[in-house]
Amino acid sequence: GLAVVALGGGRKKVSDHINHSVGLTDVLGLGDKIETGQPLAFVHAKNEDNANSAVNTIQNAYTISDDIIQKSQTIINILN
View 1 (cartoon, helix red, strand yellow):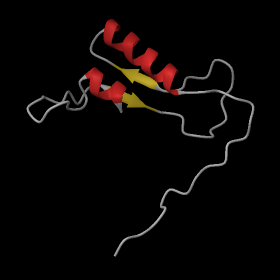
View 2 (cartoon, one colour):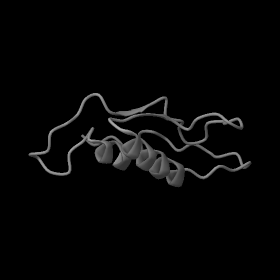
View 3 (cartoon, one colour):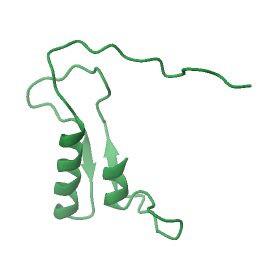
């Protein structure tokens, strides 16, 4: 999420303009298997500097391990 906001695809404050042409696609999720050389996500940016910054943010957000990760429930509780 922070990478998308930094690219201009989200708002830091209500008055910020959203650039709908930037963002991330094909983002790997928690516990997804990854092969050497496989991308963690695809970055869509307005320039190379923004793209490099987003790539750095994404790489720092992931930990790649040989351990099998147990996925948590998507819905923990339903409030009425």
